[in-house]
Image (cartoon, rainbow, N blue to C red):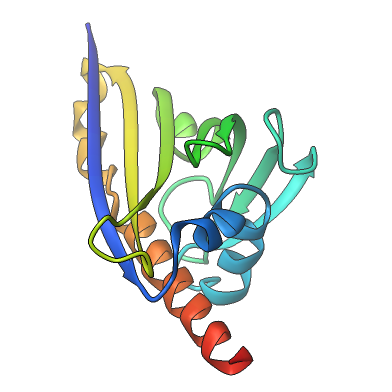
Length: 164
């Protein structure tokens, strides 16, 4: 038997519009900023194939002390510039090495109808694994995606202030 699950969380980023946020999330800039701003929290990202479109493969090396194999490789499986949706799937390391059959992340950049200078980042993790590995479920957390959204938002707000 397989266990399938999904976790979704929305993070509101104030001071940055959806279009500006998508410029970071829609391609390789997200990995560059994660490496620069969050190397001790999330890790460092390095593109190993592609230029940011569908089919791009990125290797994320986790900070020292992170449980597991210490890295993951993910492939960009969907990038929709119109709807501002990006999906990636782990193809090696990370949760795949722990025994998950599927570990997919969807990032949606939504306009906040209440304020055009704020953005809602909807982060979703979908997973599938054998029921014999149910003890691994507590490791599935959306927290790194929330931290990433908050940190990228603060960075873009600071950048905007400094360029004003």
